[in-house]
Length: 290
Image 1 (cartoon, rainbow, N blue to C red):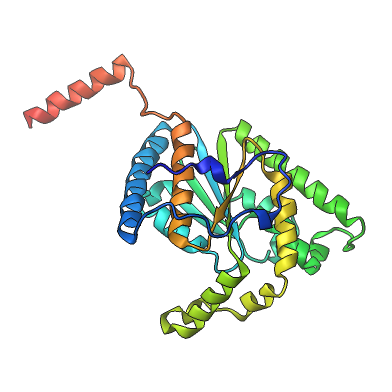
Image 2: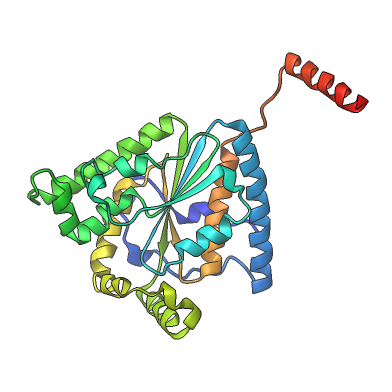
């Protein structure tokens, strides 16, 4: 069953209205057994493609995950990337900036975590927090600005969007391919998942009062996401709005997008020259004589 990943892609120039994008789409699997079979197939394919990607050492792949709390970012990363060789993959998470990070531009801390060629880098939250949570909570923004003021706020966000787009274009020119996922969760489904974290002892550790406080700003976050997705989804670094109310479907959609992206790179194993081939034959003869 081939999933049409482009159905979830935000075309460049689209004005996003999240109420028009489903949080619960038709399942892309027929049963739990079918889901497990599809995911296993995706994981196996990804493992093979990643091996070639690593060996070719031509491109880097950066995967960015953004979402509201309890949308399933951690689970999607864990399940989808379960077959990837950890030697060629690294996950980075970005929380509130430290005092040192506040002394630099807002892209600085993310730049240090970018994947090298042949690797896959995963940002669990990213520099996009700087036009999302910072927009909803201006206190952090005030600390980031040189003069500590918030005048001309529209100019600030437009400037940051331009900086992000220019940054991603620079990365693309230099061999980093970027795919961005917004896991689109409904407020009602978030409520159910919060209750599950409270009611099930093994999930208590996941629950945070801060998550509940952030829920109060739901509409503010939706507006911030709409502005962000509209301004920064480009042909070379697209956003995918993934319906997240059903976790299995979300994981299958994410994995299909990654498979399509890796496949489009056209990577192949390095071809050895005649001299290297002679060296290998000589070593083989030597080993056979032992």
